[in-house]
Image 1 (cartoon, rainbow, N blue to C red):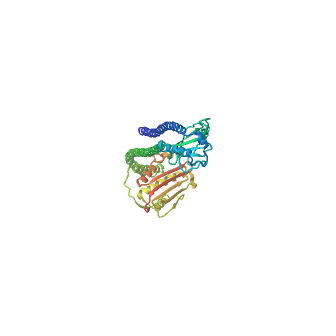
Image 2 (cartoon, rainbow, N blue to C red; image 1 turned 60 degrees about the vertical axis):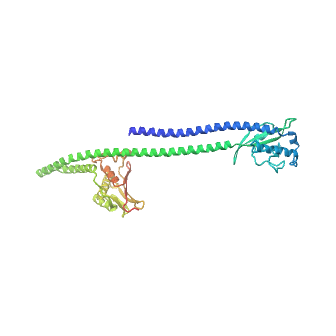
Image 3 (cartoon, rainbow, N blue to C red; image 1 turned 60 degrees about the horizontal axis):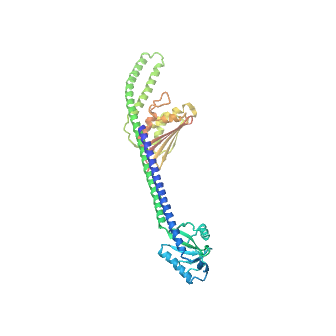
Length: 440
């Protein structure tokens, strides 16, 4: 187990390293992509800014200052509109418009415009607009629109005489590159999440497999240990049984020979021989795994039969009376008898206040049946509870330490399970779940 545990720790460590590596690779890809995006943005902004400056020099500020509403068809307006139209068709500019210093349309590349209208089709940055009307050329603004990214430049058109701004040229440059970068980012996120999820799922399967292997290994070791104990128990039982027969026969001869003497020793010998015989029988029951014949057994009548044998009125039985379980009848009798024996020993110190309660409860429409035995006896602490099912462990001087071990063996061989709860001075509860014979 120690070596396997070390290997399991290495597997967990490798899984953690793999998750970290995938996450690190994703972060590195995102950072690399961002670095490329920043470099491309810087180059595009420089190119757009330079192109906008050249375009702004094509417009005469003196003429623009003289234009107003009603001049839409004047030669100057038509000439400037033609320039804007050529910019949008020959240089790759997506849109271009000249605005007055108060933000209204002065010249538009599109037809059917009115001087003084508000510009509604482009989102303008307030800070960059203020810089432009003050004569400063701001950095282009990267804006995400529903159909992609665009670069918007703000270039002041100056009066050639005094050099003050008279209008602002707004140009919109399409940047499909940023849309592509966004797509790559989304794909990286999807791939990273999918990779981590697959790794987590794979890791979960590995961890579950490891745990199952550990449980299987423990079960095999326990079975091997129990098999070795069983062989030893069988050998010891056979070695004890023959001397016991000789001692019993000798005691009978001595009793007859000294029958006139009133000696209590002759009563003690048969009693101790009987106790040793029970111990030997427990050893043999633990060592031999006889074939169990599972058939429908009425559980409540079987329990009532065992209660009659004990003759203890401190035991009460409640629950469904017509419940049947798939079990070996003799094995089930031994289970009930073992548990009742333990419970009666546990309540001995309680005297008349000691109580044992047996409850029979079907589950899942009779597919399973619970048999619950509770007592208010001395109970067990946590350490004793851990060892309760171990062979030859007993907290009484006369116990063999095999009662609960044999009980668990029989329950599990019949396809059931047994659970044990106990607290010191609060009693013990034993829950046994068996397969029902009438369940659907």
